Length: 175
Image (cartoon, rainbow, N blue to C red):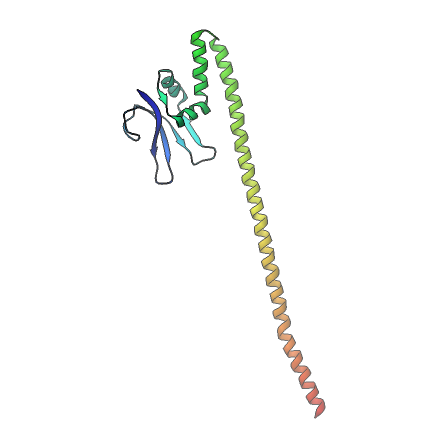
């Protein structure tokens, strides 16, 4: 039996995966028939680079995807394409209708993905702006504290001098 699954690569805690077509009996990172893409779960949203035509070819020829790969194929529209192609084979719809439905579905999916990217970008910008405002507030508080300390230090040396001058004046009057 042929499976479409992930093969791990990358160093510790920085995993990347190859999407491979392999014999089910082969080890996870062992022999494979064909590499059809890569998957990087560390980015947000996760980066999925697939050769869609080769993935579709293998799915149509009976390769069984693992759970994670099945989710990725669904995300990319390959399972939708398979579903529509089976409908074409059975005569439920024409190839043009299937292509139009797939194009509409992909257009909606791309819009959702772009909306998520924009939302993440805006959230990142808002976070940076809030952090900068908090940093500015702390900086101003420090500057105010330094200014007050300088005022106290400037006032402190003149006070003993005034007291000393006042102390000498009465002594002079007594003499």
